[in-house]
Length: 257
Image (cartoon, rainbow, N blue to C red; front, side, top):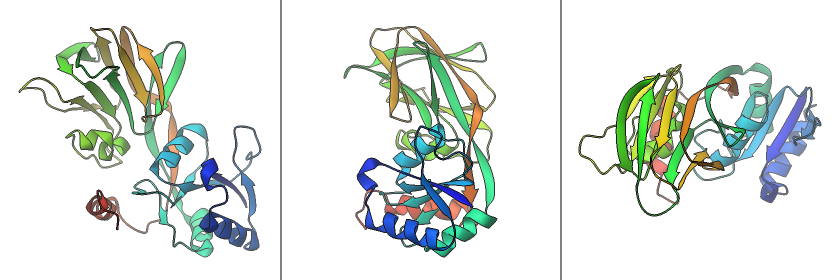
């Protein structure tokens, strides 16, 4: 079987990554580095070494089932911790079930931004901005806030959660619309259908949209956010269910343990 490997450049010589890669080769895997070219073509799986940021990049860059080994901090999106054995990885690649997760997208400045976690419209200054939101053509509300997060179920445990949003199970077909620090007593998070189109109109100058806190573009009028035709594919190793992982990872946040 062919296995593509992906990590940040800073982890290229990380000892645990090197050790697991060599052991996988000894188990008979054809291991190649995944890059923007076609070197990984024909791979059965993408093995990602790193944290959640690297997993987000991999999910929106490569069209392969993804298996992650946590070499970062929280590692909510990874399936294994750094203590995993090559044998466990091999079993997951050969026997694990592949599950899909929704991506969302918006088109702005002639390009398409795709996100696994969230698309966030924010002020480019320290001052709040005024944003109008519509869902499927129906006006929802006007917010004077630091910005608005539109997240997938996967992203509901990330930035949106920190901003007071709800946690959605990954198989829920929905999006979360979450105003960031709205200057209002009535503004609340809204959960809408995953097939909805969310329109955000910027009534002020100086707004920017971020995809998974990485790629960004300036926003000067209205952007439309909807489910992407593409999906992210993850290998489900059936080790722990979502709620056990949620409890374990959340209890670790903010600690160095």
